[in-house]
Length: 106
Image 1 (cartoon, rainbow, N blue to C red):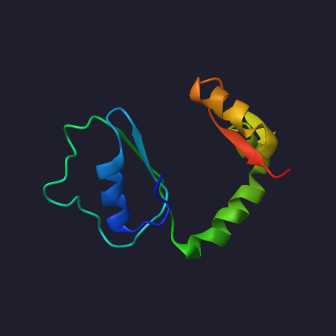
Image 2 (image 1 turned 90 degrees about the vertical axis):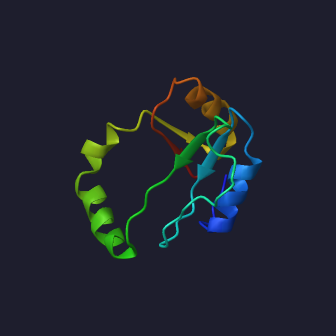
């Protein structure tokens, strides 16, 4: 899992991920990212999972939308659990028993 968004860290992740493994890219970077020449990429057969972001200026309008349509968005959540039950709920998520769970603070 790479959380910094630094291109060097992403490239290192490609080197370190094992075949049939998963590289999770959470951090963002405004500069375009191209994979360095010579990196073993296509032959590794791994998953690359990325998040998407929005500009900071969109934060407040997004919060307002969430508050305004809270009940409508609530139907998208199929589980809510606390940190102490994370391992078992992650296992359920990995099995496909949960699609969009929410981690709540204890």
